[in-house]
Structure formats: C-alpha cells, structure tokens
Length: 204
Length: 204
Figure (cartoon, rainbow over the protein chains, first blue to last red):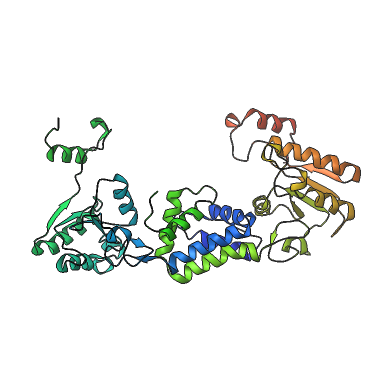
C-alpha cells in the first residue's frame, strides 16, 4: 500500500499488528481517527497506554484487575474453597455470565502446547499448586478443571491432576454434552457419546 | 459485557468506537495489548496521537500529508494542468496504484448528501473552484470528476460541473463499463449498457 504520509503509514503499521486486523482495516481506523476530535483520539491513546501502566493481574487468581487482589478473590460473598481453573480472562467472563458459579478462579494464561513453545513454566500452574498446598488465601477443597477440550487442554488437565492428586484435593471437570436447544441429529458423535455416558437422573 | 477491570472497560469502550469494531473484537485487541511489550503499546499509542497532532492536509489538493504541500502537488514530474477530483484519501491511493495518471488531485472529503447533513460548504468544493479560477499553484486545463456513481456522487458532479462551466475548463468523467476479466453474463444492465453506449475503436 502506497500511503501519502509517513505518519499515516506508521499508524497503519501499528494498528495492523492487532490480532485479525489487516492493512485495509488499519487504514480505515487511522483515517477515522484522523477525522475524529482531538480529545477523542487522546482518550483512546491514553486508554491503551493505561492497559500496560495501570492494569495488574490479581496476585491470587491472575485474572486482570485494577487492584492487587481482584474483586472476586476479595469478595466476602464468594465460596473460597472452590477454584475453577480456566485458560484466559475471557473464560472467567463466560463462567461469570452464567451466574451459576460462586467460587474463585485461577487463570492459567494458556494451555501446555509444545508446538507453540508453551511449557508448564510459562503458565500459572505452579501458583495454582501453591494455592492448594498453602491454603493461601483460603483452604481449597475442590478444583474444577474448565480448560478447552483440545489435545492441549487435555494434556494440561492431565498434568495439573497429577500434581494435585497427592494433595488430597477433589478434582472435577465440566460436564460435556449436547448444548441446550440443540437437536441430537446435528450433534457430533463424541459430544453425543459423552452426553449418553454421563447421563443424569431425570428431575421431575 | 461484565469486565473485571475499569481500565480494561475504558480501553474496550474506546476501541469499539472504531468503525466496524464490536465489543468482542475490542476486548480481543485490548487483551492483546495488555500482554504485548510496553514499548510496542507506547509506539501504537503515540502513532495514533500523531494522527491528530502532526498530520496535515495539503493546502492545494487536501490530501493527507506530512508537509504543508503534499509530495504529489510539489513533484516536478506531475502534469499540473489536470486535476482528478476524488471523494477521499483512499481514492487517491486507488488511482495512484494504477500508475496510469500523472496529473494532480483534489480531495473533496465526501460528497453532497442532504440526508447525512453534508452540504457544499462541508466539502472542499470552493477551494477547487478557487484553484481553477486563480491558476494557483498552476493553470488548470482539465478537471476529471472521479466521484462514486451514486445519487450523491452524481449530484456532486452536477454541482461542480455547473460551477466550472463558466470558467471554460474542460470537464471529463471516468469511463464506466464491464470490468476487465468480467463476463458479460454477470454484469449488471446499467454497466453493460454504458459499455455499449461508450464503445471505443478496436485497437489492433
């Protein structure tokens, strides 16, 4: 792309480094900002910088937080003896949106993936084991593994379970099955198979 | 969306004001930046701000430019007596990419659109007429109208032509027709009709 200005080119270059943003979209964003009011652009620019300078990870669950301990970990209303282990921040939000879970979380920041060069030491696994071992901030009775059902997720589940087993904590995983509202006809075999295998008593 | 942090929420809010960016994409961008290196985020933040603080519009053609007069208007190699009138900066880039045009440009910054509240005074039309009238920076012999073939584009063409007519300058418009490589079968009737009406001598 032949841009008429170095400043525009630099902005397009930077914007197109965002995930899923190509040069064309980046140019569209840059021209939009060029024509926007200056305070608006200043607000955006500062909001992005604050992501690096002011945003923390909770010292216990490693979820993003404005404070050293996140609102979930410090809430009096949460059940502190259950930890739900998830891959990333979006997964915490997904579980929170169900309003069905009142325990705490532990955000790994990824799953074990040798192909991508992500090993145990790149993830918050040691800190999870430490939480269970020391009972800091609260004694843990159950760890729910809510990682994706991929080869990498399964490997991570397996590794964490092996580490937790000697500590005598209960380890559970999410129920998998046909989604609510889905017809059996269109469910894949593995999902439907699991739904049958882990069938539950009918509630009347 | 229930975000775990005010700082993250602010960044998502700002990013989702970009054209075509929803909350989900904005969150993806924000989390990406949160995990990126600080100098990278600082570079992005500053590049965006520079779009407002350092970027100019060329005083003659109103294309974006790092300098008061853009490289095209100040180039010795361009044919200065022809002006191609376009809607926006992207259109200049599209014409430049053809490498078929050696004249100058005039960027209107939009087209006349009463529904969107865009009138003649919101566009760089007066400055175009002024360029032709005064011959500053160079006398003009031909104005090529390269605006979109929409109701708004046609209205703008009509208005500009009416203003330019008394000045005795030649006014032309782009040839419209079936695109190179397209089959007639799939061309729309209006385009194919124009291709036939404005047929040209066969070059052997």
